Length: 98
Image (cartoon, rainbow, N blue to C red; front, top):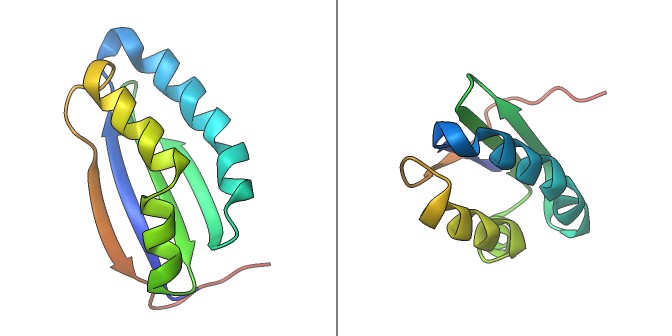
């Protein structure tokens, strides 16, 4: 794992439970992505969520950004999110895995 994505997602209060459910369901989609090494969805506050995922190379990251999870997030942004998701590309400096 050399690179990743850190995504901030802010739901409209009335859609927070639906956004949580969608992120939980996206785990299955992440499992199907060969180039996604690790994938995490998390909640920071009642309406703020995030996703952190990692990849071995830029091709994997690009494939993920063109995949089904990104498409679903784009659809959610039109109605359920307070603002557009913030997507930051990151370089991993150190990794500890079991």
